[in-house]
Image (tube, rainbow, N blue to C red; front, side, top):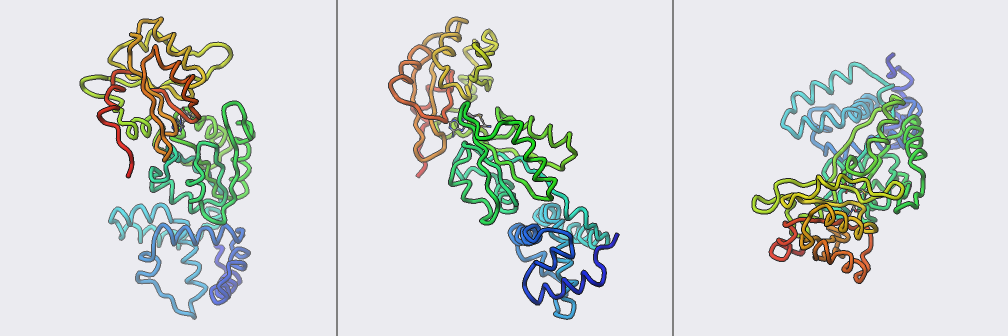
Length: 353
Ligand SMILES: C[S@@+](CC[C@H](N)C(=O)[O-])C[C@H]1O[C@@H](n2cnc3c(N)ncnc32)[C@H](O)[C@@H]1O
């Protein structure tokens, strides 16, 4: 089907003169916000070069110009990627192919982007995360995504806080999964913004399983996981030729009474352990590691609010960490790093200027 029939072209020509997207939205069977969002995304991501280069932009061809403009938006990702990679000819060829195809359905289809927002400091967002944040119609975020990051989302995007502070979920996981499917089916570009990396203790896998089952288009964007953020900002390299040959990420979160960790596997002195969600269970974790043979004087650190201006690093040992925690009122989010590499914090610790 060619959506660019005479009526639509006339409507779009009027739109160009009026400077409004109302009639374009009608002609293209899209919501106005979907049209304007795509236009803005194009401006943000492509800049002006591909938009204006060698393209006729005369008033008599106003409708055609807008059609080309709207169609290019669909190519946003691929074109931008190719142009940035220096393949402008390839980007142009792809653009021409899409202009010839006139695929309206592809324009109207919604998609979900599962995006890692990093450990909290906005400087640690990826370029791709930022581009998608400025493009999304609706953003679902949880409590680990700092307000400074939420502020960078497109101004007119819908923002939905979906929670999660320990067991206090603003929205149960199943409802979040269903909401993602529903919003995408409405034709929206949905951004699911998660702290750190979406695939590290973030339930990202569960969320996209539901999308895959529902046949929704999705992409996953990695983020800097908090272990990496804490390690760098606290001056504790997770591996080091002299101190640690491997690193293991574990969760201190319990299901039922017990923490389900393979303790005998965690006792090598040349292994670094990073415990996510472990503050509440720290005394148990330290005791179990000692009981299974890890030396009581193994260095251990807590990094609170890693990468944020009020980051705190407390250093002790497996034996002293529980006492340290009891007296220092550590607030979430915080990570525990265990292993000989922790000794380096004194020498390698730094503060952002
Ligand atoms: C549900 S997990 C999510 C982890 C996230 N997907 C990631 O890759 O960092 C939440 C835990 O991550 C850790 N965490 C997240 N952000 C942190 C930060 N800025 N500083 C210290 N720990 C953090 C804490 O241990 C917190 O309890």
